[in-house]
Length: 266
Ligand SMILES: Cc1cc2nc3c(=O)[nH]c(=O)nc-3n(C[C@H](O)[C@H](O)[C@H](O)COP(=O)(O)O)c2cc1C
Image 1 (cartoon, rainbow, N blue to C red):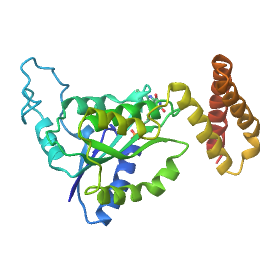
Image 2: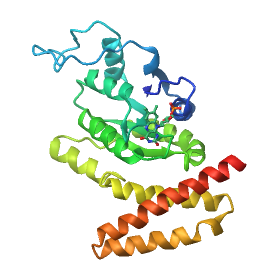
Image 3: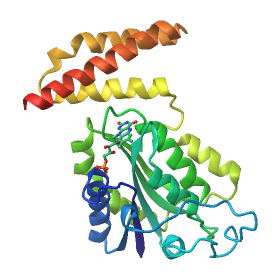
Image 4: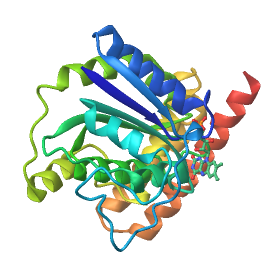
């Protein structure tokens, strides 16, 4: 069994590669063979959107670079690990460039693990995850784990990433075959986080920030914020959207500030 790990960060030793390697280590413990592609180290030009494109049905490309070699690896692998940083609430350019140049000719559904790393404020962690999951579902690499990573849950993720790799290996023969667009869209919509809006993401961030601060034994610093977040949810439930949003933004930004201060002082 062969798995492919793709890391879209420009930093070969950054957070994304660390997470990808933990996942691949878990897969190796289950006797999988793994290959790594660091997108910062390969030559991939942007897709030229050729009018005479034959790439949709055959292993060809009018651009001469590393795309065909990587595309072959993508087609040959039994499962994929895709880890990408978040830039401006979206997948970063290296990730999108890779996506645009890849084609998967296999009809069967293979499993994947996808992680987006929003290492700044955390914003975009879920919005970018949705982009990645849509792509993976459409090209027949259905995500069995799709996780948004921020500074607030990074430690927790690093402790379980190894298990994801093991899970990926075990899923290779079990992943549900998605036969048509209907089944793909349904499966995508049922994945966690896929229905989140930007506001839902801000609420999620508020929650993980508050939980990270509480985890440091400082819950008294966020008691008020927790109450405000509950109020915001109550306002949302009675369609008072604008009032709720004011609370949500306040809670998210205040909790982030407290988290940053605690990190600086420790
Ligand atoms: C141009 C640019 C835009 C960024 N935008 C975001 C963002 O929208 N949200 C966020 O949380 N972090 C943002 N970041 C921080 C990156 O997500 C973070 O540095 C990166 O994910 C770290 O991962 P790495 O060590 O694997 O490269 C941005 C970084 C850059 C360079």
